[in-house]
Image (cartoon, rainbow, N blue to C red; front, side):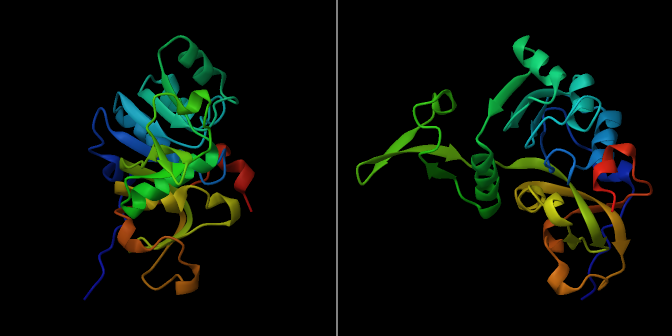
Length: 230
């Protein structure tokens, strides 16, 4: 059996992302954020997106480009405090923002990738974050039901990939990327280096190829990636 070659152009990889799609975007600040894929998503112009990302990046970086172009209707995140545009859009009622504790966001994505309906937690009990959410009592203790998160598309950044889509990440750039690669119907990975089949040692594979649909090799590293230059 011959494994398929999933390498493609960035234009073809992102083609067909529909208006109203839910898009997971990996990254924690700069490390692990797929800046090049985000720029192509902006260029292709899908509207009314729900974006799931740990943060809103900073002005003129990453997710901020999607906010500036008016493509995001809803942002599911942990914080937006480094992005004045995101705060202004939220306060003006032009952007719906759903806040999560950081660990809860990660667990909701993990649950989506594992095929679970959600998780039970007492984090955020009796706070605004729990308003409107279902609760369950188990052995006399109350738990909030945090529903699983899945997406139509996940955009992730890897250090290296092979042509089949096996991925490895470097240090903290791993963050949300492996979880999101398991929790989306279509997974697009940008990689700083694409190797031939077998080019990655099995011990170096952090996301197995079956989770990945498209691989795009980065031809240049823009200034947005500067903090992760090694």
